[in-house]
Length: 138
Image 1: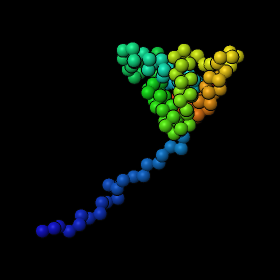
Image 2: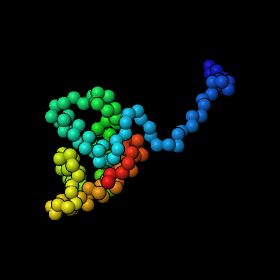
Image 3: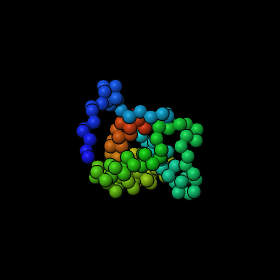
Image 4: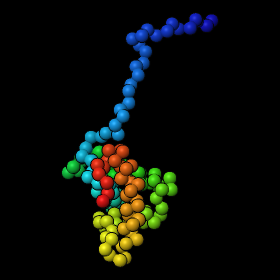
């Protein structure tokens, strides 16, 4: 036989409303100065991992608020949203591996420089919102 409905929970056992913070995502660690610095770090860590190094959280000289994969995930998300093109990705990877931004004064790097700036105009706000980078990439 079915029993009657359970009585309502007393007020002490009801769930409480948790207010969300209005400020951006905060994480422990020192944020990067610029989005470019975060990109160079992520590319260097990715290449080291591909070469066989073990990437372990919290074992670097400076504690960072993210994993290298988090920075790469932001770029991947922008690409999948069609905000970044393949040309942007080629420039980001090529100069990320060189650990230097393209120079606008060099004739052969002028187009790459404009793509680099376009890419970081999109990447910097995303990294800043996540608390990964502080400033803009310029």
